[in-house]
Length: 127
Length: 258
Image 1 (cartoon, helix red, strand yellow):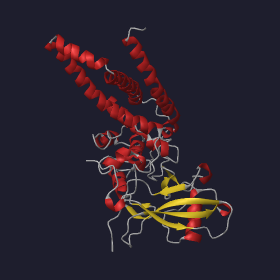
Image 2 (spheres, rainbow over the protein chains, first blue to last red; image 1 turned 90 degrees about the vertical axis):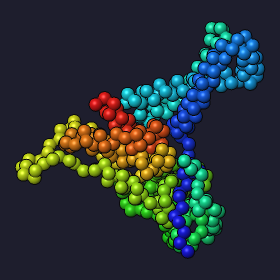
Image 3 (cartoon, rainbow over the protein chains, first blue to last red; image 1 turned 60 degrees about the vertical axis):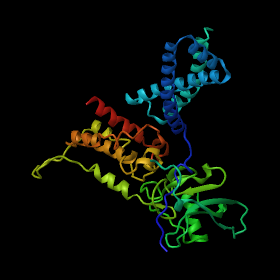
Image 4 (tube, chains in turn red, cyan; image 1 turned 60 degrees about the horizontal axis):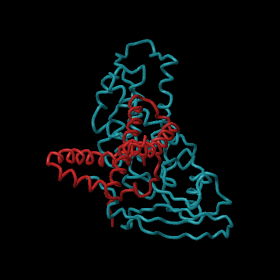
């Protein structure tokens, strides 16, 4: 009995590279950021509803989950900013060399955490 | 909608286990993807115990040894065995490479060998590359000079112009890069893929070619070119050390600045 030809395995077997991991993270983080910006807009608009609405959001943002959300968003934005710089360099034709691409990739990854901490410290008026 | 999982008829099953019969002390387990079009079964992964004391240094040597001594029905493409023809491209230990130039000593543990990813399997390690060849044809990979045939002088190329083709003319079209690209997995029917785009760039960049504008226009397409998101799996896997990601980047830059 003849059977339809199967599809060879792809995602299931292909080894992750630094570059491919960063690329998929960039995309996921981009989607999250789009939602985050909409939510921030809604939050700002909610100020028009008066003091009560402001107090409610403040309460939420000061809760554990709220704080987690803020720090997580600091990271997603940091990552997206830094990796987008990498993409800009590529658009100018720089940084395609495999070694350089790997180094900038690692820099973006660690840099995103440093930038997150900076955002947090600046936000808390600590520096 | 993109399907990330394998279709029902492609789910991989556990296959046969071929125990070593040579009583060798230096055994290595080799897992190989198998699919036989004649038996109506799902693909499976067979495990072979191979005597490494009497085996050549490359992955291809293992495959030939298995075919000669253990299971003659194992099917794979190979020709030159020196990394020039590109026939034996396959997924070795999770990364596409040519079996003839990949040393098995570079890989720790059991060796996993699969066909090139996201292709229609013809048999065992052989994938169907006809779409890629059609796409290659679509970029018209030949010199277009608009000559009348009555010219008496050859078309000359300066050394400097010739050097512009370095890093591109070496491509052997083994398809390692195209089949490593997730964008090509999901949009393989429309997106040209790194191998074909690198070739496209090679012809765009040839000083002797008179059809540069037309070539650029043809390739400037949301799906054909801009599905490249610089994931760089292509450059990571190229067995010839070329850089398809850079070639695609150069085409994008040319389009943006022309």
